[in-house]
Amino acid sequence: MLKTVDSHTKLGNIAAVQMGYYAVPEPKNDLQRPYIQMLNEIQHIRDESLVLRVRANPDDFGVLVDRWHAVLWRHAYRLTQNRESAWDAVQEAWLAIFRSLHSIEDPAAFPKWAFRIVTNKCRDHARQARRQEAAMAAYKEQSVALPASATSNERLATALTRLEPELRTLVALYYEDSFTVREIGEITGSPEGSVKSRLYRARQELRRMMEETEHGVHG
Image (cartoon, rainbow, N blue to C red; front, side, top):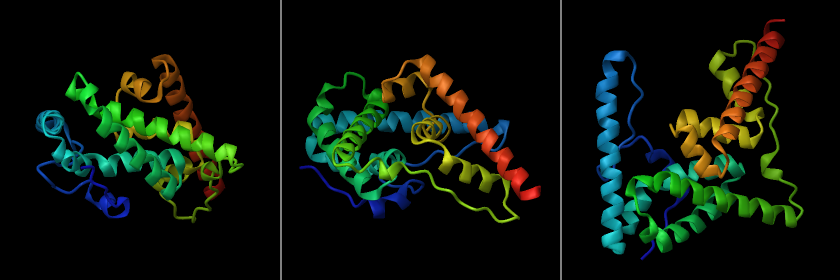
């Protein structure tokens, strides 16, 4: 039976050790890289084993939800910028995943497959919102005034909120979720060349906005 999860309580569990799954830390130096790589490989093996387990016993589907719900909800929220829309999209995505999990030939492909389903559900919600004359209200860019003591990280965070949603999502998928350009193309349904050019444009836009903000603070 499909297990529903409260997105608001799950968001804090991303970095927590739960059900034998954990968030792999970023290496702080070159000496840590082999160790981090090993942790990544172990995590991937655990994830693949979990998919195989749930395919063999659908009653364990709730464990798969525990493992991935917070990550998928975060992706949906990036796209919608609306908690309720993200919640609805992810719930619909989980239903689709539950019905089609048997169709995955390679268990290692589950993450990008699930991200792609969430992406499509968010697009469905966006189209529905346009039909209802919501006019993409969830995607409005925010203008945030920075204090004089703003750090570069604060300027980057502010620039990200001003970046158009499509570019902001690509940046998050590449830098935060560590998907490759090819995998992002599969998730978003875009050619690799388009993903590369959009990532380049996103970096240029972020650099420009950060420089403008810094000039405004110090000028």
